[in-house]
Length: 280
Ligand SMILES: [Zn+2]
Ligand SMILES: [Zn+2]
Image (cartoon, rainbow, N blue to C red; front, side, top):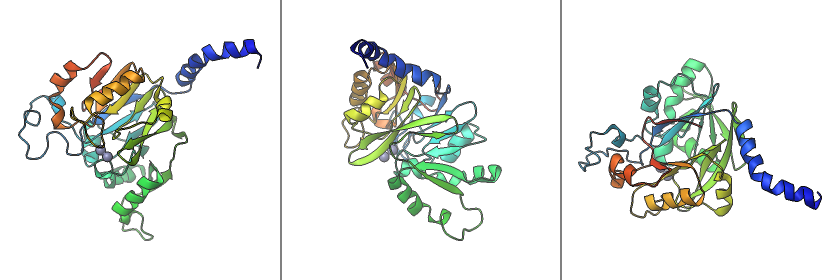
């Protein structure tokens, strides 16, 4: 490339990237199915002001989102509340489950794909890393036996690593994040990025997030935590990556009431809540 051609290319590179994401991705509807940490909010037997709050936004099922284009519906993770989340959001058809990692609060509800198997007469497509698949097979061994008991979940495992892949017409780029020492996958869907259960993101992976219009990031509580970003740490990541709108998820009752905490946040950062729907 000539020197002139090169200097033309550089300033337009950013534009080209955003243009690529605009033209090559379908518009998506994101539904927050759950925005709570592993114990959920309210937590069993807890009588703190958050767990007893009458505000609907203080009721958080375990973290999961639904991502929909016109012809494809997927969910990220199927935690212990998966069945109720599908009922509450009136989901009639599900094309796939994409997993971030194998912790119980993200995989425990997988058995309930049986209803989708029954109505679609097809296996449920599950996308997970090798490490996550190992746990899925250990936790739900009966779904993978040679001779299956009738009615067990019918699951088609698809291996993902860091290469981009597609579910229907939804393109997905995995993003590696760290949950203390455990690798966890975040996902970029066009101009939308979803990350949960992280407390560290390498600089090279941050590059994949930049340019997103909307990012979801986990923020457990105000105090520091060994394997989750705190509120302050999450807000700092949102600012560093210059994301126009960030929603915080995987929230503990220790963070405080939704209305109080949301009001304290800087412009462009909000707490997510169960039932929130956004279009990207
Ligand atoms: Zn979790
Ligand atoms: Zn976790």
